[in-house]
Image (cartoon, rainbow over all chains, first blue to last red; front, side, top):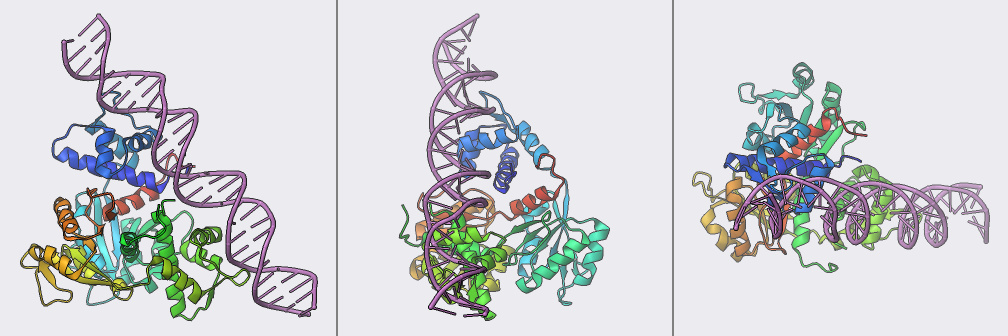
Length: 208
Length: 208
DNA sequence: ACAGTAATGTGAAATATTTCACATTACTGT
DNA sequence: ACAGTAATGTGAAATATTTCACATTACTGT
């Protein structure tokens, strides 16, 4: 088993939905509920759970709280994750202000940029010069980073992060970065994602 | 065959790499070259090509220009794609200013927001009030949209877009949107992507 | 001119993922 | 109390994807 990325992603989606459901007072869910919420199937949901030993109630579905705690057990307790962002351009700043992170245990503790006019020690989180990145990572024991720098600077940035002790990154630079095998990279290429949509909406020739 | 999203995505990645390679004067590539560039395997690359009838040269690999034109034939000619963005928050603005789009045939022709202070008819692209979205889509024959509004407004926005004639969206709202079967949605959930990284970098228990 | 070889192209095998089919079980209603 | 049923849980089958293995071929070098 490769503990495939896809399943893990779905588990996170389940958890996300459940947290939202909980916040509006729902106490019980069925595999059906989850399937519909994510556009999947009930069997898929149960299979996913089965693979990770998550169990429910034979007739009554799943108790929301139980399910949530089983998922969180697996996915990691929602402990505060400190992350840094390399690159304080538009994307970096968008992430910096993205509400979604704040409430879910992801804390952006600093941004880094080599443009002096972007540096701002007072802001929250602070935007620091690149020179301080190495030291900052070590001192604050950060192990998760985001690469939001231009593509030509991305590999160099990654190398620096790895050297400093980062264990995994979310990479927005549109190139495939080289890294040690045990290092985890999640690539997101926004343009590609858009192009993919564009491809699928045009009248297809060889579809069946 | 489902013309799987994954393969298409890889084809776009090949094309992206090739364009970059071309810009630095490279004339020939091998399946190996592409494989290494994307962190894949040469067999995978050739298989992908084989599935779509893309051919190269038995001993000399692929002529970059030929390959590019074969890919573009398939993926759509790089024709100008006009898109609109719903939501002019940080994410919307980051996309608006994202260089990557401009040069590759993706043109953001307008943003829409219901916050009057964000509206700015003078900017380029303009930020218009939501009320004008329906009319704008029809008049300009837009068929591709981006949803960058808060999650609670996303479904409503999608419904409006569909009604107006949009054929596919890139959705950043962290919920699964309901749509007709022939409508294409590409979901991106930034927080989930980050959480996935966080999951994979922690010491795994049941990995082999 | 031709032998050697380094590449492609692709069926077949292997592997991974999803879906089916159904046994099991706990709740609900009477 | 118990029959009916609506849910879960999971092997097995089906399907999709990736990798293997190798025949084919065009270039390169002499």
